[in-house]
Amino acid sequence: MHSTRPPRIAVVGAGLGGLTCARILQRHGRPVTVFEREASADTRPQGGSLDLHPDSGQAALRSAGLLDRFQALARPEGDEWRVLDPATAAPLAQQPPSVSDGERPEIDRGQLRGLLLDSLAEGTVRWGHAVDGVTPLADGSCRLLLADGTAEEFDLVIGADGAWSRARPALSPAVPRYTGVTFIETGFDQCATRHPEIARLVGNGSLLAKGAGRSLVAQRNSDDHIRAYLAFRAPQDWHLAAGLDLGDQRAVREYLSGLFEGWHESLRALLRDGDHEFVNRPLFVLPAPHTWRHVPGVTLLGDAAHLMPPVGLGANLAMLDGADLAHALVAEPGVDAAVRAYEAVMLPRSVEAATASARGLDHLVPEAAQAPAAATVR
Image (cartoon, rainbow, N blue to C red):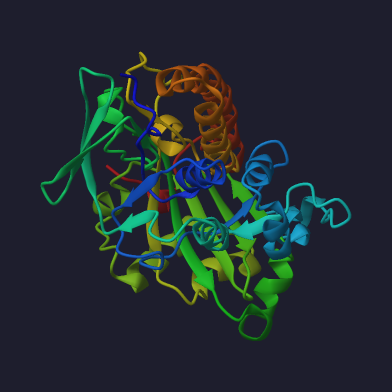
């Protein structure tokens, strides 16, 4: 006798894509459980500001019934950007904020995640439930293996668990590779009063200054905070080869000062005057194209499926993935048909986006003709 129970669906990872999928499923009356290894929503900072695109991130929020709440939090003026000459800090290019249409308004990643979390039924997210792996079963379902040694079975497991996904090995042997670019992150608090010159330099949106093999990026966040990234091309173990302890903030600052020698002092303030410790963030990507042979009972979305450089596409695409998968699960007659329909759209789309994001990274951090002396590594 055919079962009339709704399909058992698990989402691994409480990131933007997985939460979007869960919200839309619940909006259509479909049960879903989200497994998240972090202990709570505020275990760690969620990162910087995002611009949500009309045809992806905003479209996903519209499907989730959350666009109005997003617009109440978003900063349309945040899509302003300026490119400065590294030696003089003179403007080379700029785009004023499009406040009138707010085509790509900015929002802090943490605010957006909070908006999605607040929209879910209580208990949807199982905090502190780390997933070790997933095992497809012969009947088309999938077993979820938890770090505490227990296991649960679902009709579909959705790997939305990011770069180092524990669900991905069930579909693909691919692992992320280092891009050759590292970001060093820092931040500035109470900028209007404590860092007025940096606040004027960055403006309402984002700032970029770039030279051969290195760049400075800064972006306005909410609550009078500015986040800055010092980007450069170097081997992943650059700090070891340079004899640096990343915990020694003074030594890291001296190294970075040498790396950006000759840049205008107003730009060098981004590496000199931060209120937060430097955080080393090497950038990884999945191979492109990253595809797999369909396996019943499991699929991927977002960074788990198509990890890309952070140039404005990843979060938008993850949310669109989540929305597309949820809609397919509602519209198609069965789980397997839904997943096939989703993958037929998502996989080709991700190849195109990966190509565009790779170009974006090359634009953001141009190749160096020769590595600068301060960044020389063995």
